[in-house]
Image 1 (cartoon, helix red, strand yellow):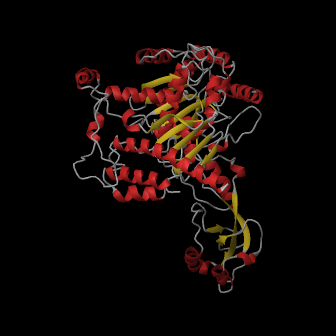
Image 2 (tube, chains in turn blue, green; image 1 turned 90 degrees about the vertical axis):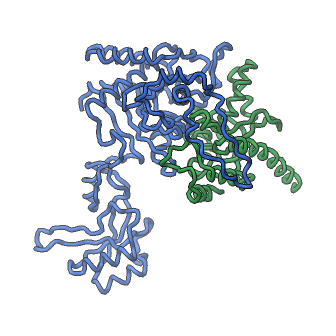
Image 3 (cartoon, chains in turn purple, brown; image 1 turned 45 degrees about the horizontal axis):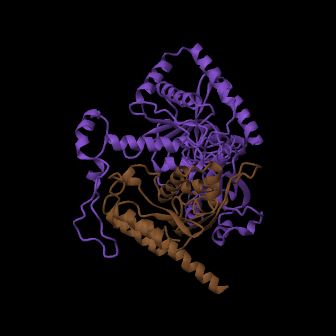
Length: 414
Length: 197
């Protein structure tokens, strides 16, 4: 691996295991005569289907050096995890033992489907499985193009610069981007603590200038940038809201500054993107309001036609002119990416589910309250009504390692 | 003893009715009908209802609305962060539906004292249904301070569910079209039936 380049790694729905240490399950298996194979498999699929083990091949075919014909072994059914008694087979399966001359034994199969070729190769050493490379329709899980990688690194640098500049204490930063046009929708920092100075409104223009200046940077200046960042990141992490969500009350207090314990960077950025939505598309809720002329349910309170107090008609002309006709009205943050310096806490991670973010990129993990793999893993909660893809962006030159050590040290102390 | 219990029950119904009133206001405004009230020493000090459609911000849940009302007031009163934390540690929340993972986390961060909810939330619930954030941080290292709070559900759950039924019958006007057509009775109902405690 080239340590001078940025690296983007997918954080999957389930915890990752090293390919050699994947969880396994016990099963009953038996060598079978090839002439019985079809009949046995057909019967087993009926009486002992392996519902949660669709990735496991029912039959193992092995070529033995001294035999002409391959040896077939079939999985009969799941075995209890706590004992090895062959009698624990279900009666229906036991009935097959004599007629088909089975000699059951216990073996292991991998519990989860492989997510990589490496995992799959290790699994097949235990018992053959099938492997389907991820077919999510979210860009990036199967790898990024050179162009996408550059764009992702650029926006991550925007987020990191926001987190370290203009704030004495370190804070988290969130940059919401529309990847279809590579445009920043909102960029904000934590405002949770009294000591984190109120954030200057970063206008879209300064941000885009910033992006251009990053584009112009040579490799040398990129190294200088990285060193500068590392130095700044060496400070205290105690004011990074998602890392210390319970500690807001311990902060020193300046009575003039605004603060709010829940205004973590992601929450502020979501608020800012919805404000943008309301500004650019003042009337759009109207078109979605259903026809309420039909009589309403007797149990329900009378339904009122929504009055649109927040978007006076007078302003519409101006806003229409401001609006780029090519911009489609967003539904929340559907299709958007968010770039965060630190992995979001559970509150922010769930807020990003609610707001329908498509992809999350973060640079550093959050071992105290992280919601995307460190403590909880919301991308793997099947019951949620929306799922985003999560990626970690590793800074070049092993910077992430140095910081990770620092973070461990800091969190152990606090 | 039994008498005390009955009093308690009557009291919790009184506060939940106020939360349900907030939920009805949300329904009238074509919002997902969830409402809440926050009490301090038996007095209602804040109320809130869902405003996700109006604000186009899907995080504007009833709980967040009520919390913001309180923090705004306390900042006006020039309370320090530690005084605000002290206040929250005496607050009790009544909400018509189990707080979602986001709100349940927020309530833990704030260090709220107790939470009483109506129906469970088997899709997003953060107080036992999907995650159990009311138990505090799973990491119990010294000083990491994941606070937990007392939590009890099932208070006037039927009333909360029937409001949801009304909402899904009328359709969510802001949902994107392919996802939830305005009238889709069966799906809305079955979704809610599984939501019941």
